[in-house]
Image (cartoon, rainbow, N blue to C red; front, side):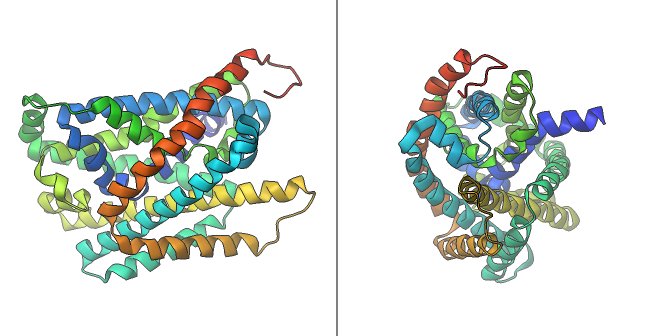
Length: 368
């Protein structure tokens, strides 16, 4: 029981964050190519370290603010942090969520098309139906699915890394040691971290299990590495095919085809497909929790039809956006929102939020 309690309180927020961060691009390798490998093999590693540190810092501060204020949905969290300015985050998050749902749909369509030769839109529709089904399960079911699938995900990425290192180890080491520009790795790391950080406030529902400051800080510090380690393993595996892999829409398929194992290719795609499902479900659940809390503030219960109606509406919008294509969605859409989230979330939480935490005394009845 003690082990389960530690897992639930300390590791679960990181697993939930990881499950949603992976999204369409991370899981397929497209984000890793776009934001990290573009800076060169070593520059990409430095950028990943920067992103991880920023994730951990923001997660730790956000989790503690949420615990102190009892604000486990993003609306109440930002009303406490920004006051009337909370609506700016909601508008930006809604656009960002639709973009991620579109990336998930596009990635699923590309995976089924490249792996099995099935029609692109079959993958798009299939993933959206699965996302909608899981998003209606509630916090407890979503937490269990995300924690359990994270273990499966780690296993799949470890196998991919060791297999690629066994086959292409010389190329990987050559890429690491080759003299090359490290690009603007600091900017790349902050940029990648910033738009993913926007996903933390909608995923505060597991933070309700944390009991004190020590637990929230530890959970926040661990959330960064938990979310990035699978990406690091994938990045190192991709490095053996640098720079050719930069132009591949789905780098995961490119690597799996080089390994030549149809069985592992199918198994990996199943794991990735499941990850895409939980990513979409987590985003929609965060929006549902925000609406449910607004109803509770008015002493009312959220009507049962609101959850499925919201899910279907968001999924339909994401499906329509998926026609833009995976590479264009990641390259053009994410960068624009990065600066918005830096200004309305990262800067306030690391200044005003941190100041409030330092002034708050445990046991006080005053909200931070």
